[in-house]
Structure formats: structure tokens, C-alpha cells
View (tube, one colour):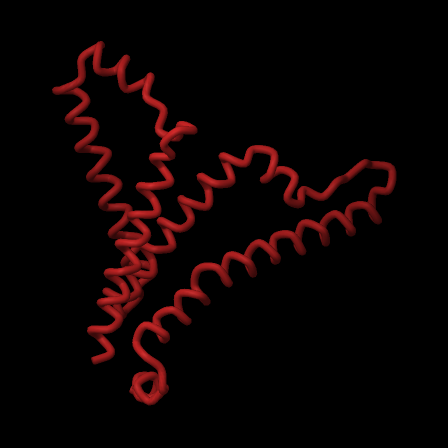
Length: 169
């Protein structure tokens, strides 16, 4: 109750409150996490270069990530999709939202895999398998993964915002 009262007394609109929470959860968390990983990497590099000066130990840094930029972009899309699911889950479930969202996502993935296996057994022919293997989901012309994941994230954030706004009233 005290946190709800202090949130209601804050002189800001519901969108501003949600946007500040979103900024903390998504981009700021990503920057802090990346910075923490880089600091840990360079700390390990410094310790190992002092302990083993004859070995050529190099820090990983951003070189490993930036060599394959399409992998980095796909990873960011995946991160945004998962993060949007957890923001939506936090606006739906109040008790243990991380555990509940994880269990619901695992149940949905399990159900999708089972449904996919059943459909693959009954509907796939050799010609359909050949056509499916030749389709590129991330072509240079139409980035289908980018459009689908950003649309998915936008829908999740919009539903979470309206749920947040409904709960505050």
C-alpha cells in the first residue's frame, strides 16, 4: 500500500510513469549488463596477464560480437522480445512475476513444439520440406525477423501499458 500511494501521488501521467519504468527495465539494464560484462572481462584479463605473463591472453571486448553484425542484431531482437514478455508478465501477475512468466513461456513453447511435431508428421510432404528449407527468414530485402519481433515487442509493450494504466486507476 505505501508504494501504491506514493506512485499515485507522483505528479506525472500514467504514460510518463510507464516510460520511466520501461527505460529502467530495457535500455538502461542492457547498458549496465553490457558494461558489467566488459568490466568483468577486462578484470579477468588483467589478473591473468599478471599471473601468466608468458601467455598471450586477450580480452574479448566487442570484437567477438561485432564480427558478425547480423548475429548481434538477431540477438538484440531476441532480447527485446523476451524483455517485452517479462514486462507484460510483470503487469499481469503480481506475485512472483518472473517465475510465473517463465513457466507460462516454457509451457507455451512446449505446446508449440508438440503442435509443430504433430503438424509436421501429418501435413509435410517432401516437396513442402524442400520449399521450407530454401526460404530465408532474414534476407537482405525484407528483414522478416526484424519486422515480426518489433511488432511483437510493440504489442507486448502496448498491452503492458494499458494493463499498467488500468491497475493504477
